[in-house]
Amino acid sequence: RLVAARIEDRTHSIRTLVGVAAHAVRPDPAAARANDSLLLAIRSDAGAGFSVTNLWVYGADGRLLGTSRRPLPDPATVDVRDRRYFQE
Image (cartoon, rainbow, N blue to C red):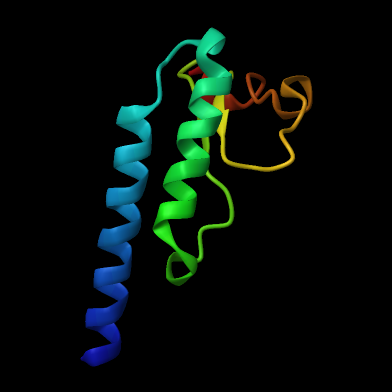
């Protein structure tokens, strides 16, 4: 029971973190650098106990809106618009 409760708490915390990130990021590719900084701050504030390596937020069309990854990737290398779930 204790393990199940910890897993449930952890899942809730991660969902909350992802929800905050999704609502805080501006859905404008021109705001990518500001979004990157915001996601980096969220990841840093989450702390080591969260085990969050990187946050990535994509628009509904599959364009990268922001990431906490450092060094920053070239946006052309992380284009996922060809994925089926972005085309449906």
